[in-house]
Structure formats: structure tokens, C-alpha cells
Image (tube, rainbow over all chains, first blue to last red; front, top):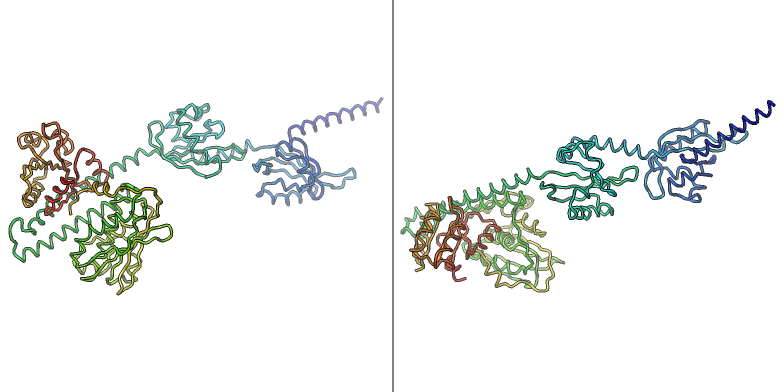
Length: 498
Length: 122
């Protein structure tokens, strides 16, 4: 009777244990390894969670499933098992699709019927979701106080998963208020389609950041979008929005200030230069020789002041990104010839002749006519200023690979090596410039470089003392089927004061 | 001699421009310190060319031109703006307002008359 009772107890205990194992098998990932830590058996739960098949895992080292950074744990685990102890801890496994799975693992020694160590059994549960939540919390704590608005949006569902304080202030909501918000509902169809197009390169992995300006809900924003791959495999779009209202206002005020300075300085200069110019041309009668000399000095310096005003305004415009560029594809020879003609009178003052010794009439580029004329005028007037009386300046157009080089060569003193390094810096002048009483601001080449940069071109020079200098600009050549009508361009020219 | 109406609020610039245009010997000149006065005097003077400052207190140059265009005989009168605001975009904007061309300040008084004549010839 006693034996029957004992058998029943054993049977009941075995049955309960089998049920426990079955339950464990359902909910935990189980893996059995041999003494060399090679996998000899895995359960369905592990196969399903990792995406591998049974044949892909059997015979592999247990650590082959580990995340790179967690591989060193294999040694720690081995030591514990060999000592007959269990190991417990968190570990990342790699799924077959390359994604990461955080697991809570317990690995215990496995013994045979005689008690000898034959391997290990590991029992794991997937804790990715809670890990992601922890990670998310760390991240959001940092983001929460940012002055920029930060929104996190699930890339699959477009539902909002996070807003920082600035974003909630803008959206007039609180932490529990945006639970059911979805971008599809907040945006119009057009806005939503536009957003989807913007994030496509992010989702395709073609770029790691998208940056653009947009007006959203009547507010001008600078948007930066990044894709955040959460540990659980979720892909979250992190949108950082910077309100540009204040910046736009600063830019508007700056532009207005520039225009006002331009107007307020040029208006009195019009009277000053005009009056002196008329006196010098004897419009008010013949001037005594000494008076003419003094007036010439004043006129020359008034001229210089106008140049400085123009140059400083240009520098300001470049710095503020407000310099207009009307880029058009046209033959470069047109602007070269225009620049030579416009500088003829100036060169004559120095008894210098300017000639186009090599022209390329087919070479076309995309450039702003007025600004390029400004650059070439600067190079030609510098060349004339630094040429000896009776000297010559040569202009050459030459193809250099896929670029057109326009060179302006003088045969003056050249620039010494010490001055060459800073020739494109502001307020730099070659020493001999002032010797000839020539107006110069020392800003021209700096502006020329900025203009060439804006036009995807370049500017450089070569110079040797005693032999002269060659300054050159280069433009990327553009192939065109038909180029514009020269006569039409000429008819468009503005009349400008000297 | 072409009848030229010059509208400019700055007295000194008026003086310089008057001497410059007289110096060229090609114009009969009338000068007005404001757009309002130009509109009042234009029907009697019947200008053949208009030279208008852009930024003036009260009525601006472009607004003055709009009003002058409504006066009989001035619908197609060549108009030239003078401006100290020399951004290419500003100049293009002015040209778009039925102006023949734009003279940028400071102008060269010696060549001002020739510049105007060249613009009229096209």
C-alpha cells in the first residue's frame, strides 16, 4: 500500500515537472550546448525569436549568436559552468536579419547520470521591449529640455511616440495628450505626401539625415530628420524643428539696414562727387591750377570712398547670403569683351593697353553676368594699375579639362612671396599699389573670390617678382545646344554712373 | 532741346543734376522736389523725358510715374529712374515698371546727359 502511494507521488511529481518544462518551452528560449559550448539542441521558441532554422544552429558555437560587444561574456560564462555554477545576466543576441535582441539569460551546468559535467543549458527571455523603453527614457530625458521642438514618430504607423516640452508647448498638449495623434491626421494629404517623400532616403538608408526648410502650421521651420533604430527593431523618425521666425526677422532687418546704409551713404556722395566733377570739368568756369590740383585729390578720394561703401556693402551681402546671383548659361566671351571695353578708359589713364589675345567663342558656362563683370573688372583694373606706363595687359581664354580659364596677365613688378599668401584676404594690397595714387580698398580680390565661389568657379594667380602677375578665374563648362542672343543681352544693360 | 522733367527731393542733387544736364546742352529742364509737384506741373510742361528719383518722402518715384502715366500725352513718355539702391533685383524691379533704364547713384555728372540720350536711342 505504501509502495503504491509512493509510485503515485512520483508519477504526480513527474507529471508536474513535465508540465513545467512544457510551459517553459512555450515561453522561454532554451538552448543546450556540449562541453565545447557547441549547440546541440534548441527549442522552437529560440528558432522563432532568432529567425534561424534548426540546421543553421546545430553544431555552431553558442557565442556565434552573441552580439559583437557581448562576445567577451562567453569566457565568463565558461568559467562559471566549469566551476559548476550558474550564470545569470543580460545579453544581446543577433537575429538572422541582423537586428539585435536583448535577452535575460540563465545558464546552468548540465551533468550526466553520473554527475559529470557534459555542457550547459541556457534559458532566455526576450527583454527588448523593456530595454527599448529604458533606452528611450534616457534619450528623452536629454531631449526634453531642448529649446528646439523634438518629435518622435513611428516610421511604420506615423503615430507620435514622443514630444519634448517645446513641442508640447507648440502643440498645446501634455504628455498624455498626444497618445492617439498621427501625422496622417495632422497633415493635409499634400503635406503628408511631401513628408513621406522627404523621409524616403532615410528609410532606404541612402542618407542618415534630411534637412530642409518648410512652413508648417504657418510657422517657418528649419527641419532636421534622422532615423533612430531602436533596440527592439523599431524605426523612429526623430524630427527636430527650429522656429525660424526670429531668424527670418533678423535677416529682414539686416537686409533693410543694408539698403538704408546704401541709400543714406550714396545720396550725399552723389552731391559731393557730382559737384566736384562739374568743377573739374570747368562747368563753373576755369579753375586756377592749384585749386584744380587740390580738387583732384578730393575727387579721387571721394571716388575711393564710394568704392569702399560699395565693397563693404558687397562683403555684408555675401556674409548674410543676400547677394543676388542671376545664373544664366551663356558664352563667356561676351562678358570678357564687355569687361575689356568697360575698362579701356581706366587703362588709358595709366597708358596701358588691354588686348584679348586668345578668345574661345564657343565656351559657355552658367554665371551671373553683372557679378562676373565685377570680378573681371577688378582683375583688369588691378593689372592696369600695376603695369608700367606704356605696358600691356593680355587676356587669354583657354580650356583646362572641363573648365574655361580666363587669365589676365600684366608685366608689372609682380607680387613678392610674403604678400602672396594673403592676397585674397580683406584689406590686402600689394605694396606698390598706392605708389601710383590709385584708389583701392583692399577688398576687391576678397569679394572676387566670394563671387567665384558662389558661381561654382574659382580664382587664383601666379606671380614672380620682376616678371608680373597672372590672375585667372575658372568656370565649369556647360554644353549647350543653342546659346543666347548677344544683341538681346546688350539691350538689357543698365546705365550706370561712373 | 528735349524737355526733361527731373523729380528729386534732395536739393543738392537737384542742383548738381541741373548743372550736369545744362552742361550737356541737350535738355530744357524743369525740376520738382516731389512727386505731387511733378504731377501738378507736368500737363503744362509736357515733358518728353522723365528723370525720377526712386526713394522720396511722400510719393515715391514709381508711384509718381504711375500717376504721370494717367496724364494725357505722358502714357508713353520715356522714364528713367535714379536710385542709390543698386541691388540687381531692385534694378530689375524698377525696369519692370515701364522705365527705360535705371541710373545708379552716385552718377557721373559729366556723362549724365549722354547716358540719357543713349538710353533714349535704345
